[in-house]
Image (tube, rainbow, N blue to C red):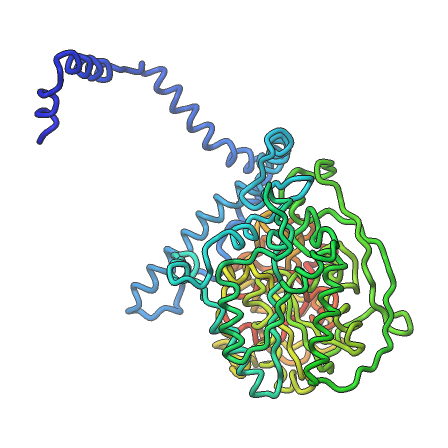
Length: 570
């Protein structure tokens, strides 16, 4: 039946109303001057952020260039499809970079966003896409809430959706943690090393009552697939330390809040209790030699603004969510020296920011008091550590694989590996399996890269070939970031470096206290001057900071340098 047939069947009065409406719409007109004014106003609104940024900071747009080398002769003449896809990827990356960076970091955005967000939070209790406002001054990281309240991460529908989530800008992630964890277990077992998996519940699992009204529970609220994962791992032979049972016991004991109010991480006493329980568990297995002792704990107070409070973007000196003060236990040697990881230790801890909190200076909650330190103190023996603040699903294993590739004897003294990661990684992380025995090298070979010695010190001028990814300030809970940069065409200006290689991989500070650095603006083709020293000499202090690694897996095998742009303070 056509629309005209339908109209003829309507009552006469209704047909008259429809005819009148069509007549009024049909004669609606906008005078040319008004139309031009509206178009001009619309164009002005759209262009004003770009114009303001161009006038106030024209160098901003240079920093939006792609971070990989432009498409060139690396494609075979017949690889037309690959070339088109690569060009399209670069164009989309640049367009998305302009949109995201202008929204997050433009002059207008930086000045207006804190004012607007403060008003929204104070008067409407509104958070952001990354932060949920709770009750009694509590804040929650939105990805944590999504993990706890979302569907089971092992359900076929969720796995299929996440596996297909890649686009022209990013490849799809490996959503299933089972393959990666079991594979890591078998690779370590072949080396005579035991693996203990330690999923660390996120804040809404443990302190849900501050997220909103509801019944107080002693048992942590876990994702629907959590118990299923634990059963699968144990049936595969993997040892799992179920931290939810420890936290339940603390809740029944009336220990109060177990996590920080305005931060994503656990309180010091929760971390210390976990270390004690885990140490007792390891000792019961009989896997280690006799403890050696010789450490002491000193109580210190630490005051800091929580990461979710900063992520909320209320601006400096905001009083709506004040800094918190906690008492940490700083672990020292018998001589009073600060605790340091020991590569010859029998226990190796792989971890994320839950390991680094109270240890990494960049997190602001003190030093020498983190999870590795507490585990070492509870065990009465040295502990080794490989940790990075972000990407707990992929980064720790990849860092371990890189170290094993560089040093075949890296795990010679290790008897136990503890793999700690936040449970949000189970539903949101990239669980690409790592190969501890693979040796992946760049196309030009490792001989093409300068290898720093312990005392290497040089000033160079070089061309940037590629850089790792850098998050927008305020988009992640971590305020500091390091980026890997591949440089070639190196001219030695000062100092001495062994060999005549023409390339190097350099780590540079890309973000400090949520402010991008000069190095964050480096793009392929830029000619830069850097002062280089051995990364190994600064790794103890900087290794836990989130890093944007290079996309080429072969470049991970190159021994990195630590660099500082010439004329810029480190």
